Length: 175
Length: 185
Image 1 (cartoon, rainbow over the protein chains, first blue to last red):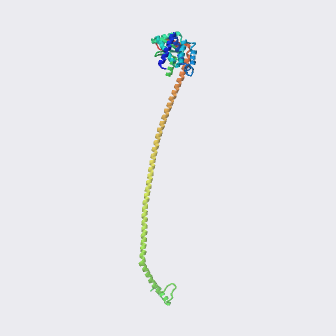
Image 2 (image 1 turned 90 degrees about the vertical axis):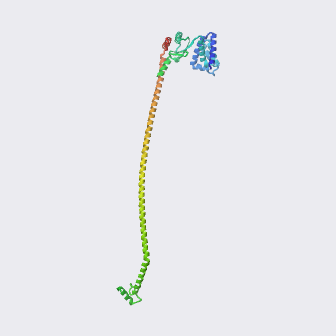
Image 3 (image 1 turned 180 degrees about the horizontal axis):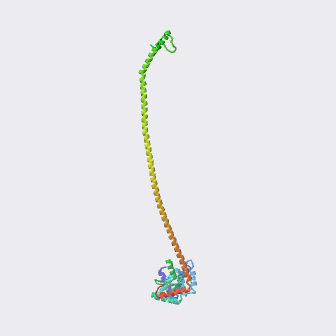
């Protein structure tokens, strides 16, 4: 899908969430769902398979998100999947998050961790990253077991890597 | 007159129609016969002797000619024999020369073959050494790669097993502290 079309979907979803007054929640839920979509092959195949009827794919979305997400999030994801744009969902969500952060004069800070962070850790991490980059940040935490341990923070083009995975990869390279 | 003639004449005088002796003719017969014989001999000497003499001379000349021819033939044969012997000697010399040349060529071929064989053996040895070295390097690379793979897998396993909750929290806190202090982890 072209960037214009992705931005168009992102702008429409952003406006809907903002009109509903649930922008922060929807943005966060969409971000986490997009990361799960990227890392889970079965989920990605199920939601992008043209052989599966649209109703069935939307049913899968409702089953997964229904109990854990706001109705707005469920409806937006169902809408994207229903229009056959499921494959572009991560890009649309990333564009939406950027748009939401820009609206609040924030920079997106994507943090990958092997385990979930507590609220306190997220607050302190956000403050630490803001101090290191000099920017106000919209922190997005992704639980990614492939990190093994530690954290990987990406702010714009800056990557701060303190993961065990990277240390092991460096060790392998030296070997 | 001789006694014999006298005896023959007396015998003939006794019977003119009969011979006086069973062996000897009458005297006049001897006379006539002798004269006739002389005449015959004279004629023979006069007419036949030259022919005989010429025949003998011709025969002598023919024999001489045959002897000369035989001598010439002998000389020619001796010359031919000498020529043949010389040719035989030349053939022997040519044969020796050909044998010597063949030996020289054979030695040259043998030397060249040995040289090429040595070069090929050297090439093969060099190639074998290179192949062995390459195989050794390849084996070393494969072994090194295998060790890295095993070490990486072992490091992953050790890391996963050693990363309990406390360690995870410690890593997270360490990261936050270092980023907050302005230093990259």
